[in-house]
Length: 232
Length: 171
Image (cartoon, rainbow over all chains, first blue to last red; front, side, top):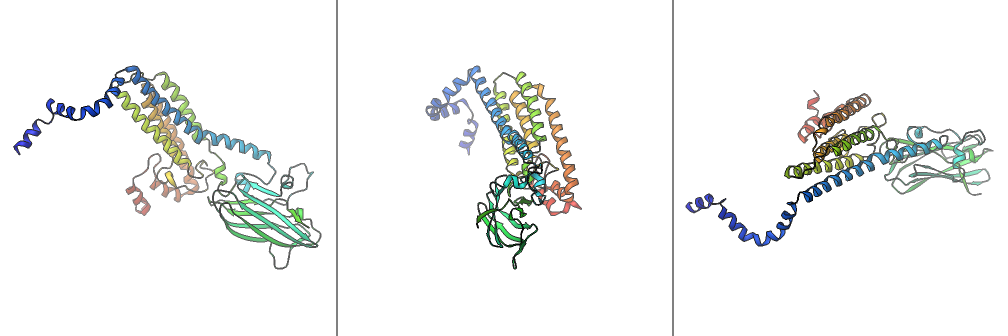
């Protein structure tokens, strides 16, 4: 007890520190002495401080630009692109949820769904969920296939394909105008096959839409593109 | 529009970006002009505190924008978001920018920033209150309940969240 008391009393004396220095000095002096000597220089200190400050500000600014400014400019560009396709079925936002009517004929002055999609036979919305429409015709019988390709980052659910048949084309006996495809996982596709009967109508006038529930529980509708013939 | 990119994700609500821009465009030039040039111990302490808040800003912004639909404004948002950082903080972008203001004050160590920072904090508060009001009008009790379990700029502690989610403090 007496010994402990003596040790306690002499714990922070200069002798104690000399002892510590004797033990750890040979290891620590070569490491810390150059650093401490360098930090004596006010210019060097100011230089370090300035580096820390400006690198932090630059990193924060880059993060701000990446997360706030770039999406804003990208959205503006996307908005302009959408305006260019104003009358097409490829629309953004709320307007994309409004079901489209049957495509009107070209030459009415407005760009139509058919004008936009006639070349590819494919509707693509924001380049992730794509719809492809093809058909085979044998006399009066038409087999129509609607491919829904989910190229988005998450699965889409409650996928429904609903046809809007023109005059002169009807669903075949035992076939329906609407089909449910259920869920489509990321990167996969599903096909809805329709059996139709033609009585003089034009296959090119077949319209309709694909409706699905996105990952954010938003119901989205994509108009069917003009059907492409596969084989006669 | 895609399955993952709902309409609300495609539309970017500009006000946070605009206020941030205004905020930084005012603070950084003024701070730079009146920056304290000394490099003593306390300067190092202040700068390290500033780095801490700058890191917080980066973390908040990253966390906020990793939640899908976070860029949609109060009029466009289709539901109340409670994922990720939104679980505890309703306006992480505003909170992060306020932290960045503190970081800038610590970096520049100038009294010239003292009256400006509260002004911008007030601006963020006004924007957040306005958004709260719109969200309450749109989502009613659902948002009111979310307000109970989350803070405007700072997350509520787990005990408060537990009490609020139990529904006891609603009565």
